[in-house]
Image (cartoon, rainbow, N blue to C red; front, side, top):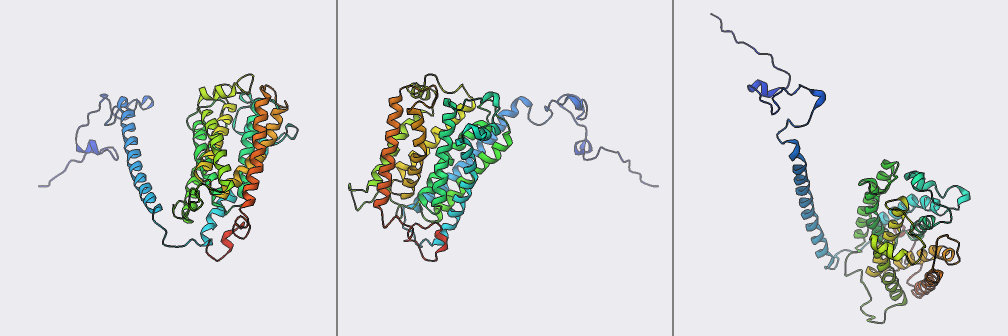
Length: 391
């Protein structure tokens, strides 16, 4: 007598059928109506999937937030303790590489934004990311004026990075600018806040991912040279008391002058209020490319002002604001003498022009007073080429 076992052929990888009868929520097999799949046959119904996904993302954010908060607390505690090791000049090498790389990446964009119309370069950068129908601005109009402001501010930072890539003050300004502006690029590339965006992937990779990488790398490079340690980096010279150097006062005043204006322009109501004193009509349509440029300008000046107020004792911050004022001066001259259409209250533009000239002179004098501290011997172009420790 032979024992026979009946074998049932089941569908490949169908474990539920192998275990027994399968009941589907919709009353149909899983492969039925495959072309009309509603995504409602899983353990969680479709109407609840969004809530579950939100809860999962919220948990991940809270977990990472707690983890990063713990790291931040440890870093803060470490900044209060005098460092046990000295900083070698080789520790500046990463900062040197990052500054030169950052400047090389953005300088061509700045040149395009500042180029005259006859070169046909002035629309190259904007047309790369925005539909021309949404950004057809005249060469002497307010929209082009703000494009030039954005190019001038970025170019000033790039020049400072080319001139002194080993300077911690220059580095911290670049770090803050990336932190402040990355949100505006996210709003355009990820959240579709602005109209007329094209080549979204190019903006995503070049102006969202790259700044995030630079933020982490700049922070690490500054931490390598103990920049965030309170025992090595001071807000002011405690020994001097109220008798601080000229550059310290000028840097603080510069930050306090421009920070309220920049912060006001970050909000629609404040932006319209401020612009009403300088333009006959508001320079940009709602969520237009010009609106994106204006927001970028406000964010750049916010970052620079924060650096001025937070790190006024660092000569590198003074170097950056010197170049920023030098690059902004021709634009304020154009506005004051009516070379830009749609302007009004030229006296106010003249005040900005005079203010810029005063800051250029005072910053130059303040930097010169730091001699022999502020010279090539203590601030060489490539600190990492020296084998001695930093002073």
